[in-house]
Image (tube, rainbow, N blue to C red):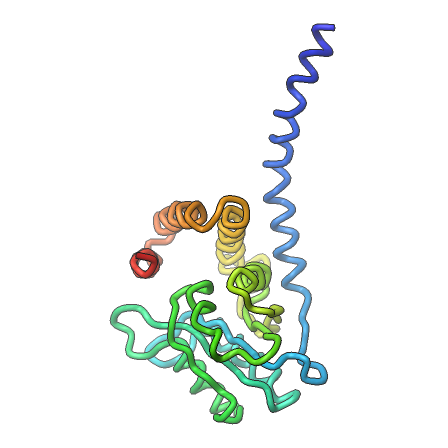
Amino acid sequence: MANLYSMKTHQPALTITRGLLLAPVLTAVAIVARGCYQPKNRRGRFGTIIVLGTAQYDGVPSRQFAGRLQWAAQLWHDFETQRVITVGGNLPGDRYTEAEVGRTYLLQAKVDPDCIVAVSEGNDTAGSYQALAPYLVGKALIVTDPNHCLRAELLARFEGIDGQSSPTPYCPTHFPGKNWTWTFLHELGGMAVVVVRALLGKRASDLCEDGLRYLQGWLRPSRVARHQVLRGGRR
């Protein structure tokens, strides 16, 4: 009887432990799986294409950003009527915003200028989404990197945006490269923040996010300046 009682009292703890160990594995699988699904704008079912911004260097998009923009231009040319929104602000000292750089690239890719809207607000995905409401037309196709797709889609839903992610096939990072690993770990952390927000609310997710950013800043000091801007933007 004593052994049976002991087994029963330990079962909840074992279940919680197994869940905590299994959750990161399931999240990792979900990130990779979602990055393999690539919806397109067949028959114009998406009224808007959102191109999420990332690094640019004095007006020149990084390879990662150019990969997103190339895919967005290709998707637009499949139907040639939908609105394309480029998003992303800039950091102190930058002469250009990510949104402006994205618009310039799309113009060079022969996207109709009347269809392009540059929204130069926000230095992260959630911040950019918050400025988009006045410009959205119908359902949105969200162009980003494969590892970012799952989180980008979930954050869009938090902000009331009806959208699906479409991973660019021109992303310069590939498994099992070092840069791919960094982006993958970044998305694992980002998904932890999303889960905390869903379960405990935004205040708790902000605290979780700050903790993870401090850790990332310790591992990658080049990210510290960006993190300071992001923390300041929430106040």
